[in-house]
Image (cartoon, one colour):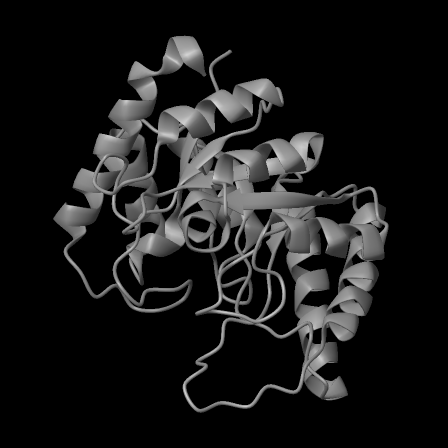
Length: 270
């Protein structure tokens, strides 16, 4: 089994999608996890840009909205955004829509949201997604970005609370390296509920430039018979979806290409 290999587009910063697609195709990727301003770029335009380069759309990365806020107006805005993103995904061919907590600047901040509000919001967007035949994937982040869903046990508890068949798990090797006692066990724990696996090394550089044992990760993916894509998500320090790229584009392309080359060498095992 050869899993398809993709790259997330947000790591390219504010470069136009047409130029990102050109670079990603030249590096030989199968597809992308797409971050796009859904109010500025139509799904028809996105489909054409990526199809012209032979790239699939595996998933959509959301903007930074707060599903867990105790402020009803903020929470309703976040729910409305996700519903719009889900409708956008439906027009793209029903890729997975990734969900996560609000990414916060936690220095000196006081947050009044709750896990209960997060569950309620996710239940509502999951119902909307079910009507569009869209699968959602909730991604645990890490303690430096959010507060509630940090590891595999947290996200599985959340899924149990939401109780929606179309809500699945997204795991990210970089975040797991921070929060999981054993990332390999985390992959096995999620099992068939894992719909998307994102990859970057411990320093968020390419595979082999940090200390994560990706051979063990791939063996765990084999063990749970994961057949979804592997999405490479190398990023510059402090970079998050929607932020400007602060580093070298050549350096980013080097790490992406090196990671793809490493995965290609592992084809017999993955």
